[in-house]
Image (cartoon, rainbow, N blue to C red; front, side, top):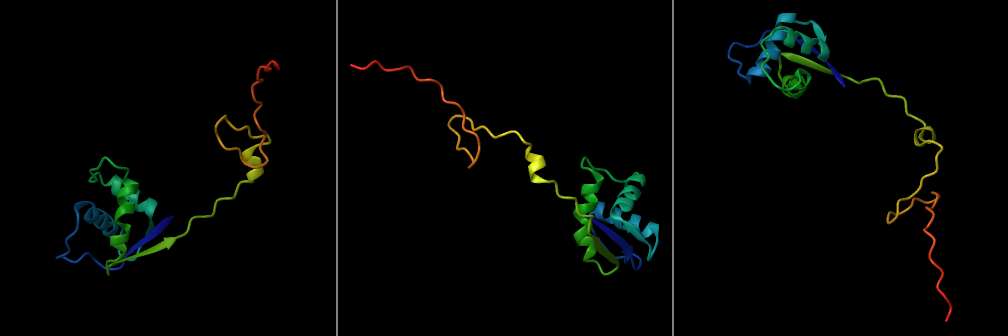
Length: 125
């Protein structure tokens, strides 16, 4: 899922936040007031600033701070639903080969049963 971010007014002078969140907000302010950017564009701008210090993927950092940023009164965050993925046909996905159960494992209904090893004949007494 992607989001659109828009800073509606400047960051208040007395605003305090985690350094990474503040960097994201400063980058958003640098893009411009009332200008919309996607999560991907914002992430790229944060990375391009050269100020993000982390071992995690930058997308994860921006994603982590999206909710707290959306709760601020000077930023608007609009959720944009991703395009749905086409569903794969289950029959084509499973293939045409019959399922063969492993010894000691339950077999799904309709699956082929494994051949049991031949037992030696017991002599009749």
